[in-house]
Image (cartoon, rainbow, N blue to C red; front, side, top):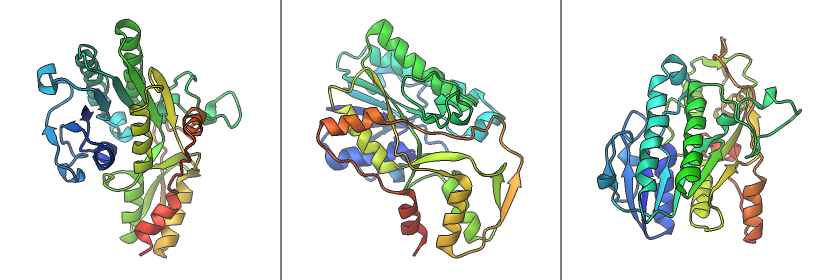
Length: 308
């Protein structure tokens, strides 16, 4: 069995490779441009690495493969606001290139496209009170990042419709865990509090996000990948654990036993107030297999990391 993993040196991609090779025997090709957000040191197994932009990889370089798991993406929303062009290139053109290669691969069992809850847009603006996103909901992305992810989702669906490409699209919530790049929310908060620096908080800080441990996420992706019943579907992957940004800041400050200095700054352009995933299909999958799935709690993880 041969698996191609794009963005495999990044935060979630490397966790996927680590989990996959901890639990299954397979040949893995990791494709990663090794930008600021990726490092070979994140991967604890010896895998072949193709250091290249996904827009430029060729069928000959990938060879035959059974599965392709597509994590590679420009993902930092603030960066997409300042310059959206790299997001169009990587997230749209890069996905198109991979689809063109994959649809011609006779061995392909499944194209697994890793998407995001952000494609659904702001749940706070939904017509239904306390709505959480279902797979069949219309997409209403708010940033160039989420818009390009929505566009890449549509490319996958059209490749299935036109060419019969077997696919799985997963849409997950915010991930936390080891090897997360320092620019992201949790590492930035912890670093600022430790160094007694003010924490810049967009607006009132009451934006709600859903959180999931990265190794819980990649386990679900693996389970879906190898199950023949989960094909040509979109699957939400969420925990239901939703808290505000201010709640997390205060929790880390409490764990570190330090005063927190908050600097409220002008809100991000197009900032969504609330994300939430309705993950009934995922839970039904495990119920049908008579399996119990338990998720690591964000606050427990923060205690483990910063309560020493």
